Image (cartoon, rainbow over all chains, first blue to last red; front, side):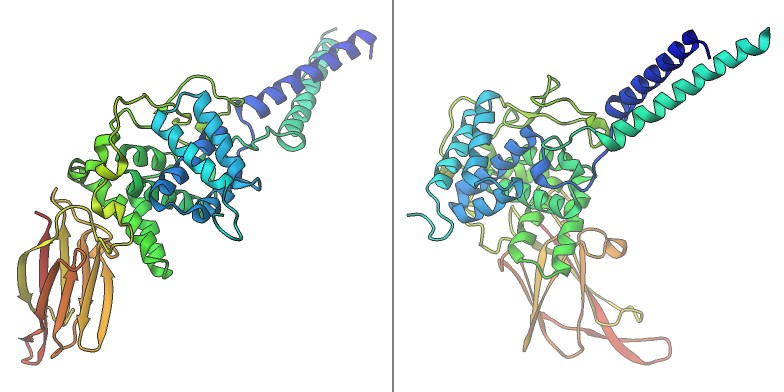
Length: 118
Length: 297
C-alpha cells in the first residue's frame, strides 16, 4: 500500500473513532440504572436535603435527620446539609427553604450521634 | 483500472469501521460518561425510590405543599398515585410501621382529592410559586441526556420568594402537627351513607365496605378497624381494586358474632354488625353479607 493510502487509512480510523466517541459519550451514553442516592446530581441532592429539613422542622429529631441524610454519602450529615445550604443560596431558593436548611445544618453541627444534643 | 479504485474505497470503509468500533469500545467500556453525582431520582434502585417516596410523603405531612410533593414524585417516573398505592400495599404486606403507611396514604388521599388541599391551611404558606421549578438553563454539572433516564423535569431550582410568611405552627392543621395521631385521612370524618344486607352464596357473611372522599372519588389506603369479642383486625381500602375499586375493602364475618367497625380515627363507629340468614335455591341456610357505604361530607 502506498504511503498515501496508509495516510487515508489512518485518517478513516480516526474519523471512525471520533464518530464512535461522539455516539458513545454524547448521543447514546451508558445508562446507569439502580443507582443510589449518593450519586444524585447536585440539585437533586439539595432537594433531598430540603425534604429532610422540612421534616426536621416538624420532628425536631436530629438523629432521624442524620439517618436520612446518610443515604446521600459517607460525609458527616452536617457537611451534606451545609453543601445543600450553599447550593440553595447560590441558586436563589426561597428564603424559607434556605432557613429550613440553615436550621437543619446548625442542628446537625451540634448533634453528636452517641449522646444526642449536648 | 477500475479494480484498484474499488479496493481503495473498501480499505477506507474498513478503517472507518475499525475506528468506530474502537471509539464505541472506549466510550462505553473503557471510559464511560461519569455519572457519579449526576444521576436522577428516576434512575434510583427500587428500594431507594421507596425511601424517596416516603421522604416526600413525610415532607408533605410536614409542610402541606401538595404541588411540591407532586413534582418530587414525578421525578421518580411512573404514575405517582399508583406507585404510592403499590408501596402502601407492600408496606402493609410486610408489616411495616403504621406511621409509614399513614404518611403514604395521606399523600395518596391528597392527590385524589383536590379539596383536601383547599381545606388544608398549610397551603396558605406554600403558594403555587413555592414549587420546585423546571429550569431549562444550564445545569451546574455537566449536562446529561436526562431524557434517557426520566421525565424531562430535571433541575429543581429556585423558587420565587413569597411575601410575608406566617409561622408554620399557625398554619399547619392539628393533624400535621401531631403526626402520630391515628388520623385516617385528611378532611372530615366519614359518614355512613348506606347499609344493605345482601345474599350471595359465593361470598357468605361478607362485609363489604366502600369509601368515597368528599370529591366522590374512592378513598384508597384508609385503615378500617374491625373489632369483635376477643379480636381485632385492621383492613385497608384499595387492596382489592379488581373487585370493588380503590375505595373497597371487605371482611369475612362469622355467623353469630357481633362486629364493630371504626373509621376516621374512631370518630366514625358502627356497632352491631351481624350476618343475616339467607336461603339458597336448595333450601339450605347460609350467612348473608352486609354492604356499608361511607363518604366524607
